[in-house]
Length: 402
Image (tube, rainbow, N blue to C red; front, side):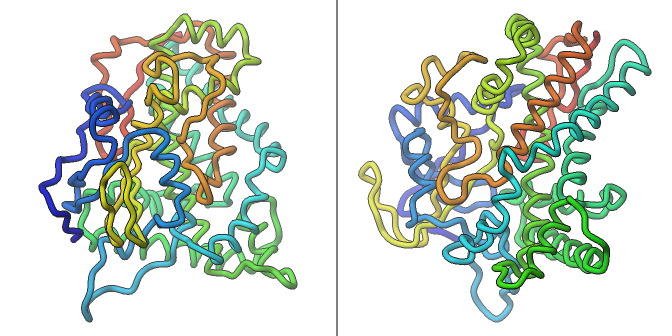
């Protein structure tokens, strides 16, 4: 366990019925921009809350993301072997080599093929909602099924295997509060599933899903990609591309439903959708969970001496509401531009799937606004239950009428 010289404050608790950053971060940004904090798993780390510092931390080569399977570090003969690194945990030349092979698949132009597919998936879900009546729970009927269908269609995951891989995925998203044994069991299980899936796909014909494309790339003469990299890709996409998109889509919809005038203007001016999506990514942070980095050398920040081995925790949820970076950050402004949010991180590990997430959110909102012009909450917002199963907070139900 990381030992810091003084007692640590707990990581600020989230406010009830609110997916945004805890109010406590406003004080920390002003008075203690870097402070020792106690994380849910009992580890201590340096909490960073200002936008400029968070952005710099993600790009600082002195700070690396540790292996989820090897942090907190354990020593001795009984220490388990680490799992393959996810894309977020790869470092140095390994990270550069894999990113060169994978990043082209996630460019805006390359992802154009998914737009009509995502729209068809969203339209089908709305068709089912409309056929069932004049109201529905958007979480159960739309925000939960859509991201999984998109992930399966893009990556090439079998939808019928969801009862196998989703429980392990959800376990890992709660890793900051779990024992290492539970984390390792879920990681090993996902890694084994991905390896088996790839083995089945290696003998199949080509396709335009990402597993097929990466397998083809790995077989190309001179390719930098190896089989283990594709296994890591599948695990990474499950961890980063499923629950986060469910939670953010639900929060984005709740935000619009509680700002009906702005939702109406967006419906009337759909050409502003791309700008609106960026504001929704800022206003309701995509990742409220803890991002742990580890210092590889000693350095000083705001007068605090960070030692090699110390955990550093840049808080995206706080950075995206920093008044030093955003005018009136507590106000939703769907026309806000520029919008330098850090929802997808910054630097070498900027989220590979950022464009896919933007595309999914944009298409989903367009379909709902087009098809359901009278969309409104069917219950008061302050009475809605919240999903507390992972640090990615979102409404557990979104009852609506149209």
